[in-house]
Length: 320
Image 1: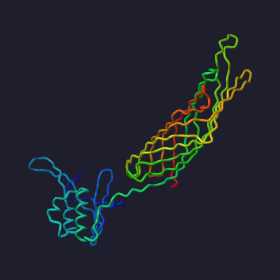
Image 2: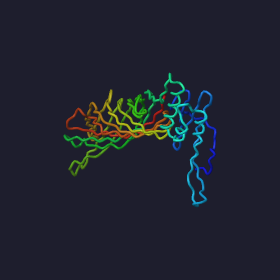
Image 3: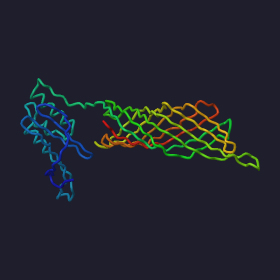
Image 4: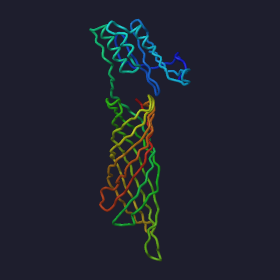
């Protein structure tokens, strides 16, 4: 905090928000720590309404106290005053949005009654974004066959790549904090596992099996997203989506190595849910960690189930 009442000026380019528009226009500027107000009239160019808080030593009490410089009241008395505004109206003013908006509205309505001014309302518009959205998916897969335990297998975890895009529509309300999105992506999962199954015989204690899993699909999450703004450039978001497959092909093939006996399972796949947490920078770049719940790859079988689960790292670049 300052130790004197004189403002410290610096020159920079900022964007002002219109609060009241008329013969006298009121603006505001805010960042993480301060809010400042500006004004202009037909005869006064845009300038800041000066309000400085500073520390002053109290020699009588041997302490310090915070003093507020109200130079903005002098500015208003000189440049934004009409017959219906008394000196007492200005004296009672505080350096707050509600007081200043009422003051400027009262002034404009007195100067030009035929053009009654109202505070500018926040106009929020929807926005459509198209993004390139590649991803890395960390996958685990297990199979459980209640009819034949020889086909129970846990595949090793594997990372695969996805290529896709995202179409997002930011809803035109609640300050653009909500959106809906669809994120089609193509993925190809292939994995192999060689494992042993105990036979219970001393002569041949184990049977060797080789399992091959293949799952190709266009995965389409359809979901809703909520943004939480950190500042003008940065925001974090959470989302939830319902994920379906299009054109999917899922199969698991088992080969008994000793006699080359092959058993194959093919099926349509089920749907699942996805939940994500991410960060967006300047509405251009984003990264998201997305948890996918377990998906049933072999939904056409009653006694055979497979749990396909994954965690995705999604990177996105906004084209427009």
